[in-house]
Image (tube, rainbow, N blue to C red; front, side, top):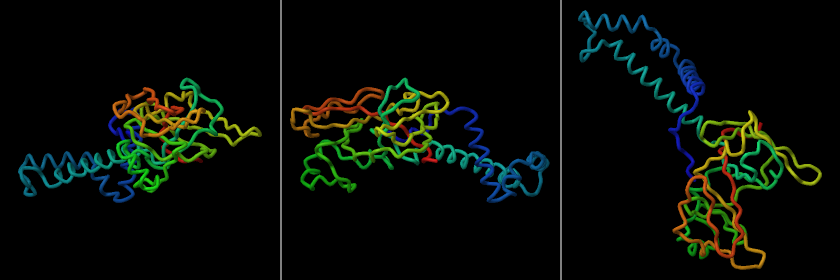
Length: 264
């Protein structure tokens, strides 16, 4: 899965929050550090001293001014790192089923979650025979189920997600503009779980389009359903496109949601 497209644009309010968070962290570590950066009088005095030939000149720039520039760079760098951290799907990846235009619905009992990115733990189609020869145990130490297996957009065989998705609240995004709180309710008397998104968000809004995933199971006729029959040239799959069919298999496409926060 393409899980880290870090450099897409967020809203200005999120950037301001990131900067303030970074400055606050630096202030806790070293109050003098930040106050030195924010003291404009000190910066001005440094420039004046440099222009008048102060003895503290180093390489044509006053010592205080050099330190100030370094501090500003450090603040910017920490803010950049903070911005990256706010965009990482640290809570995992949800495999969801539903109407892309829906804000709420039922059926969350069929959803699942990967606690870590399943892509790097996947097995290439070209290595499927090796996987079989190893007792269906992948190098990343997960078990391949020949009757219920998953592919991602690059043609990697993935571990199954954990199912069902535990009830609770999840902060989710499609790594575009929308961030929403997904509420998954406990099962009702019939075993169904309802779900809903906050802020009027639709399921499509919080779907990460470059990540494609599908579940493959044998057809009702009992035909063989194997990754060996997948066609390598069908991959990679374009963002937002359907995953390819595989001979002898029933296919179910799932939307992938990045989880920024765990249940509350």
